[in-house]
Image (cartoon, rainbow, N blue to C red; front, side):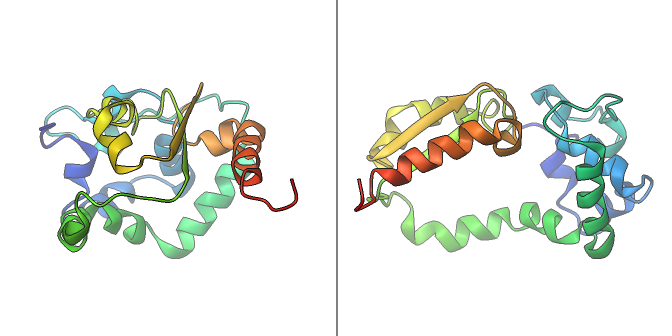
Length: 176
């Protein structure tokens, strides 16, 4: 659908993305991926690795500090990127394993909090699916909250997300 430059396509071959990432220090890799804010940045031009295509932001947004990003970078320095990349490599397996539950309804109250500029929400038809009738038919008791923000909305709008979660949970508390 998106071609060989699409980041998920580039993450499929074991070792390939890890080798490309190794050209950069861990903090730079974190900045490149953590701070993506446009869906067109998810597809590298032909012959280019996504890590090379992504810009390294010179200014950080107010919701994250250099020190916080360094903590993440240090953790990945210990563990490497193989684990997170395997999430993408197991997508087909996940579909196969979850096939018996295709079409099943989630019958408990649920809340989805997402940023309106989240790259996962804003591309590939996800927004239309979540706002459409099929999603609501599968999760009939869903409350969808779309906030002004990006992929890491829980950090970008920490207080607002916390308030939304607490309000949701308060509906089920015995001590009202």
